[in-house]
Image (cartoon, rainbow, N blue to C red; front, top):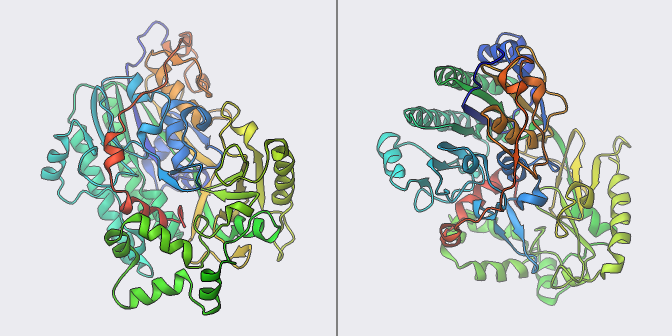
Amino acid sequence: MTGTAPPERAFVLGLDGVPWDRLRAWADAGELPNVAALIDEGAAGELESTKPANTALAWPSIATGVAPDKHGIYAFHGLRSDYHHRVNTSADCDRPTLWELLSPAVVANTPMTYPASEIDGKMVTGMMTPSREEGFTHPPELAAEIERRIPDYEIGLSWRDYDGTDAEFAADLDGLVAARTELLHLLMETDDWRLFFFTYTAPDRLQHLLWDEEVLLDHYRQIDAVIGDAREYAAANDATLFVVSDHGFGPVSKLVNVNSLLAREGYLAPKDDTAARGTLSQLGVTKDRVLGALERLGIDERTIMDRLPHDIIDAVAEQIPGGHGLYDVEYGRTKAFFHGYGNVYVNDTERFDEGIVPPSEVDTVKAELEALLSDLTDPETGERVLDVYDGDDVFPTDDDSPDLVVEGHENYHVKGTLADAVFTDPGVHAAEHRPEGILLAAGPDVEPGSTPTDADVFDVAPTVLHSVGEAVPADVDGRVLDEIFAPDSATAQREVKTAEHATAGRDATAAADADFDDVEDRLRGLGYME
């Protein structure tokens, strides 16, 4: 291959929540022929996720090559100084993405891309898109074409509608995937592109609620067919194909309610002692009972969210006792609290409006919390259940990053619910994220049978850019995975170029005007929100 020109195009197929061990086993068993072909003909291996292993952090990290302390997204919601939160959007990403660095580009259904950026090319936003109105596509007229050619296209499903109806859920998810594939084929009609980035989030959605071998394998056969389409299209366009997932997946047997632990040990004060809340609590009036009574009258939670202003909902929610990690905490008496997917914050006086921990004591409280969380054991097994990381180590460049990051061991998932017990049954929550995702690659310069070494999500962007001869941003946290390229190929022999890039500046108008109620309903259905 020496002396041949490197590929000038890259196709990135994103798959949300794919576990490497299970995918490899199915491919070896002959169930996924296109995955098996990529393993034999190209590079394949694990791709380590972010800490915590979460969609909201990981996809921006894949797209930019930097960690959350640089791109700025730590969760689906940004935490404000008054302890409330707002939905994070593409406008909150502080570093340039692959589709801004490599153009023209076609980008579709990737989480955290709403509102659509005015890129050189086409974009259809994905998870966290509130509606198919303003901000759904770029150019805006692409939305009308999707409506005309794919009338059944949906951004996502309302997960709470499927409680106890597994077969209906699986069937409707199949329809969602079919429409998504129609969009893929529509966008494949585009001739002018250097980057094609298309994501399927359906594996993640299915696995959260159904962790059944037969059901999962049926779904992955659909995904394998999509991979086949991508292989064919990439080869026809002389593009290097990358198949990546933001994290892996595995079953859940117990929930670990971190805020409940903090309350038990005196670090968090539940809001249970005001006169109104105390009286309601004594009468057995809780959020769950109120919502249950309203549902029996035909008024569900979504109807309430649609009909009442948010400030009224907040005011009522703060008075009715329950286990909500936002409304039911007395922050003026709280030293630390859990927020988002795996983040713990010390309630310090400089960062939060009702903070009680002075800056001089933050490190002491952090050390206490790290010991408390690291030593937590399952009373039934006696085994430790949590991995705990210092936020200063995980996010070294941002003083406002979470103080600690907490992840559950295998079969355990951390939550922020203020439950009656630290350990609770997961209920319909069948499975949850694991750090080990996937990376597959194939193309003219990819070494057949190669394996990436200690690869993580931050390596995707620099590797993609280098594969097409583009410079890599100087401040990336990842590296070019040069071990997956044939030693005598132009890509392997070319020196990695770097370039300085300014932080991204994006228009947040569409996001500011959007109603995210439906987005938050989907997040609740997946366990991402209380």
